[in-house]
Structures are given as C-alpha cells and as structure tokens.
Length: 185
Ligand code: FNR
Image (cartoon, rainbow, N blue to C red):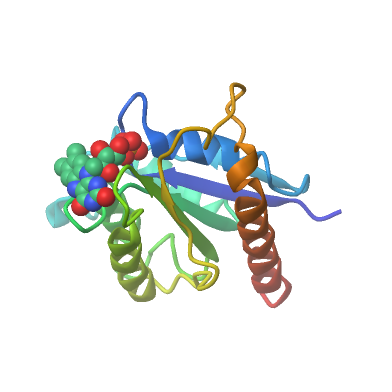
C-alpha cells in the first residue's frame, strides 16, 4: 500500500494553541496510510533576502522537510484578518532561493479554528492567495471554518461527537485530494 507523508504546518506558536489541538485531533481521522509530521516554524529567523544563498540551518531543515513530504496540511489561526506573521515567514523562507522553492506542486489542504465567529475564513482566503503564487494545488471544498466551543474536543483530545461527522468528511476529502494529485505526478 502506498504511504503518504504529510508535512503539517501549524500557524501558532502558542503553548495551548487551539489550532495545534485541532491539528492533533484531526490527524487521528486520517486513513492509516497517511502519516503527519509536525514542521516546526518557531526557530526560523526573520526572512531577509540577503541570506538567500546562505540560508540558516533551520531554514534548510524546513526546506528538507517540505521537499520530503508528499503533501501539506496547514492549520492556522487568523491574526488581524490574515495569517500570522510566523506562517508567512515560513512560506517565504521555503520559497527561496529563487527557482528553488520547496513548495511547488505539493498538494495541500487548510483548516483553522478561532474563538470568533468567522472561524479563520479571512486568514484562509489570504493563505489561498499565497499558495497560488507558490504553485501549491489546494483543496477548494469543503472549506472548514471552525469556532471554538465546549465539546469540540473530548477528554482524550479527539474531535467531539458534535463535530466529528463534518471533520471526518473534511479529512476524507483532503485524503482523496492528496491521492488524486499524486496519482498524476
Ligand atoms: C487574534 N485573534 C483573531 N481572531 C479572529 O477570529 N480574527 C482575527 O482577525 C484575530 N486577530 C488576532 C490578532 C492577534 C495578534 C492575536 C494574538 C489574536 C484571536 C485568535 O483567533 C485567538 O487568539 C486564537 O486562540 C489564536 O489561535 P491559537 O493560538 O489558539 O491556535
């Protein structure tokens, strides 16, 4: 059976991040042939184009992890109606040097959670814009804008009963999207 290695990028560095909790619970809904590795972005320097030809070890590590993955999963908060700067920083770093982007052609999906009613909708729309520029084919539907609420996670950190069906169907579509792309590559 073919295995699918997914690089998961969480856009929050916060210890008790809702998005990290969502990411941990969501991957448990994936088919067994999928494995997810958490790509760290908290140790990257601020992007500076002067360093494109002498990238820091943390940047080279990020690029390696993306390059070795079959697909991408972004789980991100919304900061001021866009994606957090730490996520944009990571996207920029791994897109360079010019012509050597690690992102190109990697199929992706995105999801996010927020205490607000918009559930990261605007951040996700901004992320879609960026991923077009990076040549990352991104799952369009279903969109998933999750709001924090009691019972979203159960006591074991799984997705709670009320949201499980929706998030399972999201994961099923995501997995099918990744497989579809890799079957053509
Ligand atoms: C926020 N938050 C927020 N929420 C939202 O729905 N829309 C927004 O535009 C913003 N803007 C924003 C800016 C900044 C700088 C911070 C720190 C926070 C609230 C945000 O959704 C909340 O803090 C989440 O808990 C962040 O996600 P994690 O860290 O829990 O994953």
